[in-house]
Image (cartoon, rainbow, N blue to C red; front, side):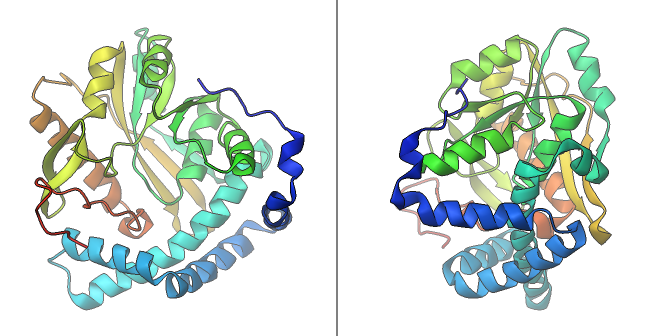
Length: 307
């Protein structure tokens, strides 16, 4: 467990002043009506994709690789929706970190918590198999309002951002565990905690297998899910999250816990994990984090880059 970073006078150093200003403006914006914030987010997203051409190209390439059956026009439409949702994610970070519970509860919908409760009632921890959807900060808040949980994350390199990010992410939740603290996550699961885990990014070839993800047959996929499932007294429960249309908020859906998992066959087990992620993405493909170079690690270092 990483303790909440204390406030230090060094955070008032001039090198942080611009960030303080940006955070102050963001906080003031957070009090605007939700529909206004989402409209602002969509506009920011379209502008961001125009300015950050390299990220736009990565997202476009990922869509080409994953959905070759779609026409160029369909892919372009999905890319535009992803741009808008990326801007909304910036706003969702603001409201996820700063909105009081009474205000955020109006946007929160959690279905299927009985599947999680069934595992907790057996004295098990729960490893939530989540996905890098763009509204993740808001989804974490929805889960925390139902049952305060534990996050698994990469600490921010900027001390001031880490100060705010940690506090924002534990609003309605318990505490955070650094991504290198494998032992800490196992201990939390053994203590009967609900812990977030997101296995759907490219973490390199170490502790990974190459299995299909959408149309890419050789996707580097972490075996972390099986590692934690074997090492801890826990159940693996998939969750789907979605930003609802019409500014209606956020829906989290828990599915029944995986049975007979892991099997001991990493290829079969991680193929199943990727299929679960695919189904989560297909709920709202424009809301997935396509900006990440998901396919940067190839089976052989000599293989040409997909990018």
